[in-house]
Amino acid sequence: MTETNDKQSSLDFVYDFYVKMKKNRINLAYEGEITHQITKAFTSLTENNMALDDDSNTVQKKVFHVMVECLQNISKHAENRHSVVTSKDGRGIFMVSKGEHEYNVTTGNIIRNDKVAELKKMLENINSLDKEGLKNLYKQQMREGRLSEKGGAGLGFIDIVRKTGEKLIFSFLDIDESNSFFVLTSTISRIS
Amino acid sequence: MQAIKIPGSDDTPKVILDATAENPLFEISGRSLPEDVVAFYDPILEWLDEYAQKPLKKTIFNFKLEYFNTASSKLLLDILLKLEDMHQDGADVLVRWHFPDDDEDMEEAGEEYADIVEVPFEQVSYSID
Image (cartoon, rainbow over all chains, first blue to last red; front, side, top):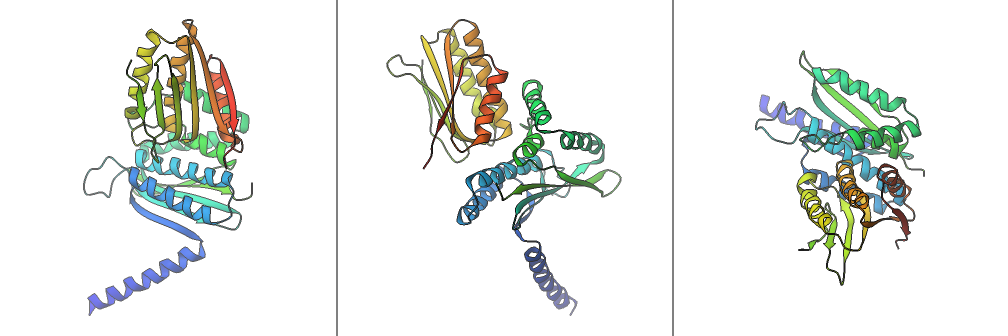
């Protein structure tokens, strides 16, 4: 009996989930490891969808750009806490929503608490800069920054803000004494 | 010197580095978001090190990229820095940065590289349709 109830509630959950996705105009949602294959699959899926719509080339390129950088951030930086096997790729949640006037690309992943302050400072700094400031920071980082062992250039967030012209929206939610959940949304205007 | 010819794919650019005197061509084109950027670009950088020992009379290096991720941008700079070294050692080097005429971001990326490296740099727009 309990089992039947569980199954019934899981079916209800599916509908609930569907309704919420529709309501929030989410056309892609994923939770799991972000591998290179996943990155390629999601970007080409979104590209195909956008090509069917009347979005301009410029908008399509920007969405593609933001998706790649966001997915790579998770793949390179997210903590892999819930993974049973140790994997080189980070995991997290990834969503793309499409409103009338904009696309939103959202990521969520676990991050160690001791990394929060530095990341927060970096994001706040990027959000505080104007076009010229971002350009200078990008050039400086490209010249002076070194490629991390995971292949990160420290340029992703700067690049997203430069390409979209929109500030990053982010928050850190407490999980426990050692981890937080980092949520980040990038917005790409459909009006170009 | 053995030429490098790598066909392009949906995440790696097409690369041709051919220093044969009759038909020299130095070109990186397409998309660049390799799974492992360092592994992809290392042979190219090594090839350029060797080529720099005895470059042709004139080297025209073409970048004709549709897209590159930020991880690749650092490696592209490394290539440009090698070309800068060659130029400073007295070689005749010209960088041609090709961009689609409707792609301001790609045009701006070229301008920024031109600011960072000291090497003759030419922006070339092309139309796609």
